[in-house]
Picture 1 (cartoon, rainbow, N blue to C red):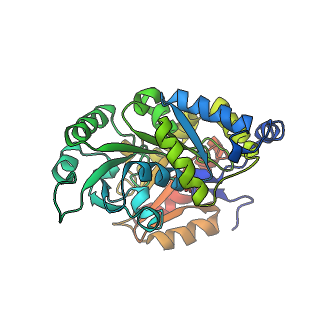
Picture 2 (tube, rainbow, N blue to C red):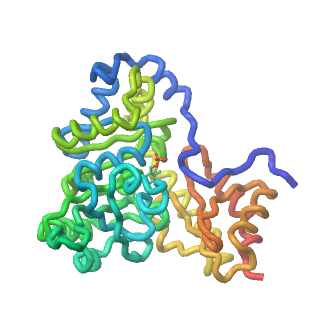
Picture 3 (cartoon, rainbow, N blue to C red):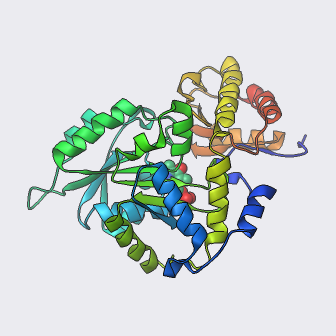
Length: 349
Ligand SMILES: *Cc1c(COP(=O)(O)O)cnc(C)c1O
């Protein structure tokens, strides 16, 4: 039996602009951003940089680009970054750091993607030898996407900064969902910003803009990143139409992320009640619910098929891992209905 409308829980990138956001796009004052003359872009860059206590911002089409631009200003070709094995920069950017920046990654296994300062201290190796690859930067993802939306504890981030300082390393934040971390933890955005040399944030995830990310850093790094962005062919002209959407998102859509978090927790509770081996409510910090299907009758692909024919779309992460994500298009009623559909598929049987 096909549902009238699919409940699509694959990703918070599935949001489409609301009429209010479209209105903000249409009314945004525009100029040529390659000349740095788009007033909407310039205002957004100043506004978001100030929110994180950074000097400047650079609007980019995607978070993959802002991650890579930021890291290329911190890490010379032939050196490495240290991060966890499930980081987006390692798994989901098609080797861009290596292909475009000559940068390698060294990874460690982290529980739910949570940073482990002692592990990082153990494997980071500042440039010191004619043979060994030198570490130049540490990368943190907050919230951690493939870790199930977990929020990095502030204390661990502070310890990691101490490790970086003791070893002369820079720190980059992949903050695609830093807004979710901020709303869930109450930690001010500027407190996160203060710990990192470069920060990447996305407007196109839970904040609901159709396109857009931003790199935050000091003047020298932003100037360098601007050159690299242009070289990649992403010097954008009247891009205030997109910055207008991002501006609207930042002004209106941060606090409402708490609703997505509440709905994800509710969904996790309903599913854990019938399938405690599959869903661990205690690790649902934000808007992502991981499904661990190691003990299940169905593989992730089989679950996807069964759920799809019953009206729910899930995201397959691996043979036995899947993900459910809440966002502005998902209502309380959707959550109850999705749980009704998924529960019999997940229950041991
Ligand atoms: C979505 C995301 C990005 C950026 O993705 P783009 O599709 O390139 O905008 C970066 N890091 C994390 C953790 C993400 O979830």
